[in-house]
Length: 409
Ligand SMILES: Cc1ncc(COP(=O)(O)O)c(C=O)c1O
Image 1 (tube, rainbow, N blue to C red):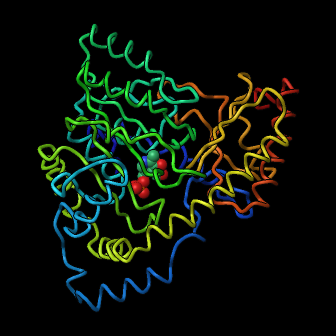
Image 2: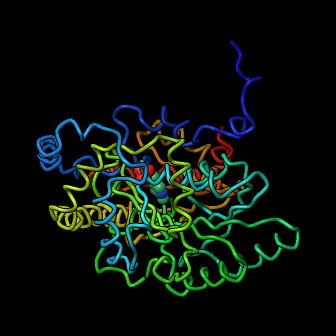
């Protein structure tokens, strides 16, 4: 049966993630994958998780498998309300809602905040999952340039003023201010303050997506969360256990205005009734048992080591004319090649030589970024990181020299 005549207007806007579309290329057996931004499976604390699973069952029995509150496990919410202090936010359980990953939060926020024709501002580049969630609501996504210390605030304000003059409604800015996926960029403190000031002045909401907050390298950065600067509930803050525990437990949280969250709760009720009660029990046991604090210490040094290996390999082997970010946390470095090289055209040659990366253009809502690519250092060990970058650097050097290669022939 042909369903194309049955699709909703929203379904017609849905396109598969370009990253998943390329999975057949980037997940070939034996390939060195600098592509997927998954946390390393080696870091998952499986012994403790197994023990917590048994404990949850012996403590609550079959009740751990019952439906739970749409808001989420009350004790975990209370723990998180307290935990938010470590991110500079004094808050209450009424300000927290749990979701099945931050991805669900993004989708629910799009449902609650965006109508077709509204404008959502996003960074150039930005996380493709965030782009998809916001775009599926029929809103128009407009990109704001970033430089080494984050969003170009002048661009942000002039874009808002221009759109207002066109009678367009700018509803929100979606930002990932720390160790951004995909660029690895961290927004400076001054810019965080400016972004909030602009949002207040022009009356739009900020979605601050912060899954990598704990994954800093070296000393704790002094950049405050934007949420901690907000005293009127304008910032909707998202974070997740995916990168600091395991993504399979699908547990994340929203910290937002207490008057706003009931609407998100209604949207969640329609989406999945509640997140997995068992997953939340395990996460609660993990947090309460003091395991999280120890674990993040370990994974910080684990990923710092990998980041250093990747950055050193880039410094050692990339030809002049190629630039990259040297992230202070998170999973990603962002590479910029000379303008004439199309990283999508180059990908199959790279895969043929055994190295996968993610092309940069899908992260740009304005169609730019064809000469950019994202490298993740989270998955591969040091040897493969060195080998993978060396292979890629050799390929890039060839493409910089050969006019035929540039066009993908
Ligand atoms: C910036 C950002 N936001 C949200 C997510 C979604 O994470 P999850 O749904 O697993 O919490 C990711 C995952 O890679 C991400 O990088």
